Picture 1 (cartoon, rainbow, N blue to C red):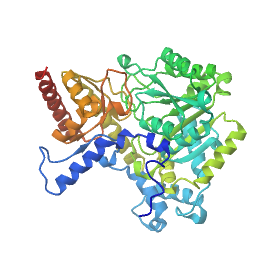
Picture 2 (cartoon, one colour):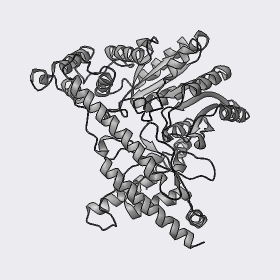
Picture 3 (cartoon, rainbow, N blue to C red):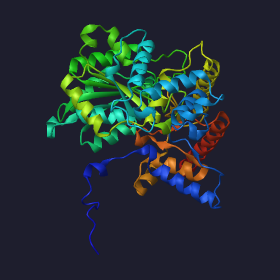
Picture 4 (tube, rainbow, N blue to C red):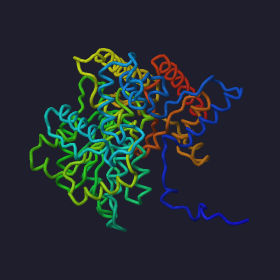
Length: 484
């Protein structure tokens, strides 16, 4: 037999180093259990509840009508003749198609995206940031926010040994960052969020992490997720100012992941874009700090994950580097045109004087209102369970509760060669059908254990999930405490 060229020995070692907990071993196991149930197998539950990933539509959320109307019209322009579609949707679809080659969504666009859509995004940013100027030529459409984040990191990663690029990321973090850093052979620089202070970002912790990292790499970029994933916190304006001042002083590139900017639930919290705060800090900061901020169709109130739509705005980038960015984007030709169209609807929704406004506003308010309710419900129920502590879910789509794991359970996990929270989440899945992700997949302080769960299931299903989780946790504590 001819030997294979590509084996685990010849595989790129950076690929082997990549881990992505959100679709990791727990989720693979959940898929196996689902297939077992479909084939008539028996389990102590009738369905798997996948609370592992922020996929709103998979959890039953209905699409926003206006967005789907515009994308449908762009995909099949013959529908323009149908009286079933409102004129404001048809107008937007015609405008998007006018910017497409051959007036078709099946054409390539410019690598940075359709010009009309880039201009709409710039207008949206100016309105969101209360007049802070936005240049459409600084806007790049992306295949989801992940694509933009990976692209910027590719530009930043360089050097060898002690000059390798250090990437500062929050812990807990979204595993895209650790996976990208492993793949690119950069250096992960952890800064820990303050769990006792509702996952706030402590400026002293940034200084500690930076100084420690300088001993073995060159920190060049700081990544922020606001509102937070998996932690659900919303950073204060003062905190953002401190981060930007720190980046200015240490000459760091700032990457601001703002995909949950519409998902703010706590009445005393407000989303502040990094760009707006930077602008308000004055020209010395605004004209010098390099900043890339990211948004997506996948979250917010639309939850359109499958369209893979997103954009990034990049400011203060060296013009020669910007040319290299455009070159890098041109290699992948362009992001999906359907995703670009969906992004355009998000930044250019129906206005109060348009036919579709009332229905659009009602659907948007309903989704965000339900998420706010479920955020509060999740926090309250989890905090009533002995051995679980959950910070307020101020924003985003997740809870990241801390769980007490008895010493005997930790010993068993060690014997099995797994993290204690992995053992916990596997047992939870096998006994209740609930699929959540262990905190070790996101990073956590030594000696603490967590899991991440979405708040996306319907209120009724979420109550069932939380009830099963409560009963499991109490039973888990009793079982392992009895072994003490």
